[in-house]
Length: 539
Figure 1 (cartoon, rainbow, N blue to C red):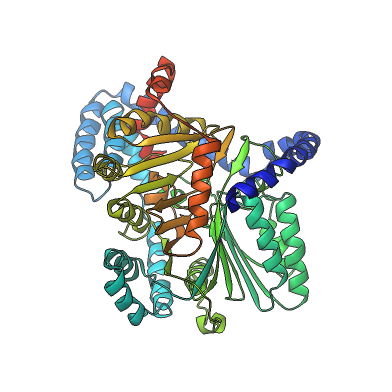
Figure 2 (cartoon, one colour; figure 1 turned 90 degrees about the horizontal axis):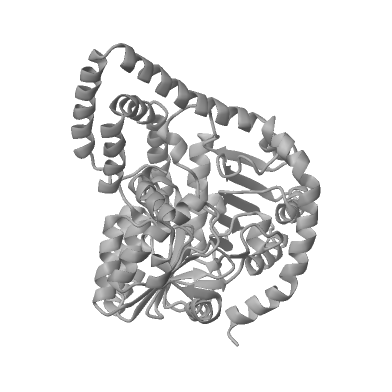
């Protein structure tokens, strides 16, 4: 039995017990939690945002009805705005998503576009991000000898390594041992074990931190390490953790010795900067070990609670030279948020030699530059595949460029398969995802759904040689709006474990979508898919 299959079997024996116990706890906490949400500052912020939308719509529609000449004025402005949008460097689907409502309700959409596209908040953040990145990049040195080896022995991957290094800023690394975790439970066990070994510093950056059992076990270790003099830095996203942590949690942790920052706190102002979330999941311990993947810190990710059936997620643990890329990635973001300047050399360590094959590229992607590193790495892998491409993603909302690449690969004889969830966490996203099934099947792409649960894993595997495990979904948000990260691996030993996990999924845990499944969907679902798919880039 494969490592991945054996892990799933062992987990299945105790998941039901954990879920039942967790459900009992949730039932007891639910009323209190609901009251706290209703009367919280967060709810107030959301209501203020909704009121802004309502105010804009009602005010301008009233003016529009009372003063007919405004129709001519705003129609003219809308036409000019349409021309402007068409000439921007935005993705074509993103342009279309604005143009349709601009034609339907020109007055409201014009005002909304101007408000959302204001740059008074984004410009200083972008400027500081670029300034701090110059310092960070100086600490990420290109290994010229490794690049020469890649060019000689793996010419097909030299262009990818060169691109990610030159334009993404993250060099390829040798001497990096990678361990693959097919489930959140596996990663969590290793995570606790490594946290307990920390002697110098712990860096944590997560999109979601939920104050549940998983987090409390981690906090217990963190506070113990603080008492031992270990430097602890915690960074979490203001939107992702908006409803999952107690009020003023940052202050409470800081008082206990944990340095804490909140990325882009959720504020009651309409602005596109609220779209730019820190979706990364990074844990670095002493500069020797790094974790990344799709797993946030919440009980459903380790199946302590049942939210959407069995939760399937994956992660990798790096030991060796590749850890430095994640260390620099974290420090750069920390310095941007804190407006500080770290001495990176304090956190650089000499790694022992590992019997590690191939090379890795731990990399990040930012919405504040013009490079779509996350999407282009996927596209390069798909284009370079000769036998097969296996993809796992919870959200499948590909742009035209990605569809073209998938289409060409499938039609050229490559076995292209994509796994999505059967039980969605967001129904509107699932509706859009399923709207692509017909197109993909027509191309020859095989589509699967994870039976009885939610597949949150974000990864890609090609030809038993290359793989990516990270935070990057196949959707507009990950490709264009979020800060993301992932690890590209080439000929690493763990690739066989990733392959075994995919094989087990296809054979035992997924259901393949057929033309009959698509035809049996209700007219309402098909109609909603058409509407939602049109504005998908804005959601």
